[in-house]
Length: 345
Image 1: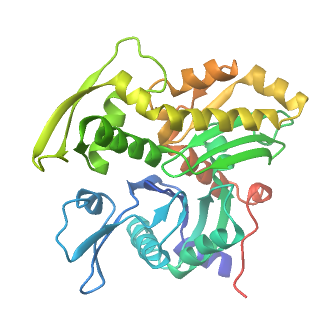
Image 2: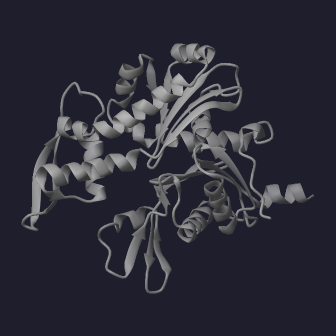
Image 3: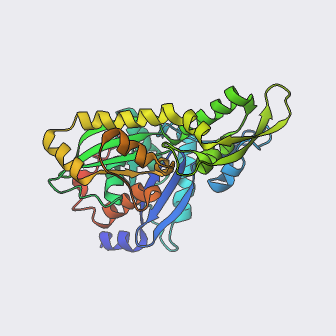
C-alpha cells in the first residue's frame, strides 16, 4: 500500500549538478531543466532574487546589495546553503502537479572528490527536501548516457570535460577500473582567455565575454579555416571601453596549457590500464562527453596525442543526466554502479 502511495504521489529526479550548469531529468517526462548553476541573492535581506538563467544574466551587472553566486567550484560545493537553496528551486520547478511526496534523487558526483565533499552533496540534497539520495560517479553516468557497454567484459574509456572538472575513466564490468580526476575544465578555459586579454591587449574582460570568445573562436587543434571575433572590455591603461579583434590561433595558444593538461590526464589513465583493457580501448576508441568537449577540434587533439580514434558523444552536454535517467528507469538492476548512499548518523 505504501509503495503504491509513493509511486502515485512521489517523483524521481536525476540531477547533473555541474559547476557551470545544472540539468534535471524528471522520470517519465525527460530533461525538464537546463540552467546555469547561479544564484542571485540580496545581501541586505538574504533573499534569493533569481536562480539559473535569470541569475546568470546578472553576473557583472548587479548593484552593490545583490550578488550573483556560483555555489559550486571545481565540481564540488563551495557554498552549502546557497547550493541547498538552488536545489530546492530546481526540485520545486521540476515537480509534477499533484505529486507532493518528496522526490528520490540520483545525483552525479566527480569521481575524485573526498568523503567530506561527497557527504556535502548528500546533505545538501537531503536538506533541500529529497526523500532518498543516491550518488553516481559522473564518468560512469556519462559513459551510460553516451551508450557505452559499461556492464560488459570489455574496456571502454570516457573523458568527461565539464565546467569545473575533467574526469577520465576506464570502465569494465560495471565498475571504474582506472580513473583520473582533475580540476581543469571549461572554467579554466575562460580564465585563460581573461588572462590572455589582460597580458596581450591590456584589456579587462568578464566571464561572459571570455565564454563567448571560447565558443566562437576557441580551438584545441588548427582549424581548416581560422576564425576571428571582436573582444570588448575595459582598457587597463585608460580605463575606457575598448574593442580589439582576436583570432582563433591567438586563442588556441592561450588555451594550450589547459588543453595539454587534459591530454596528459588521458595519457595517464591509459598508462594505468592493463594490456587487455588497453587493447579494447584502442579498438573501440575514446569517447568524449561534457560541455567542455565542444571546444573545436578537442577530439582531433586527443586523437593526435594518443593515436587512438576519438569520438564525441551524440549528446555530450546531456550525457551525465541521461545516465541518471537510465539508472532511475532500472534502479534495482543498476544499484551496483551507484555509490553507497551516506546515511545521517
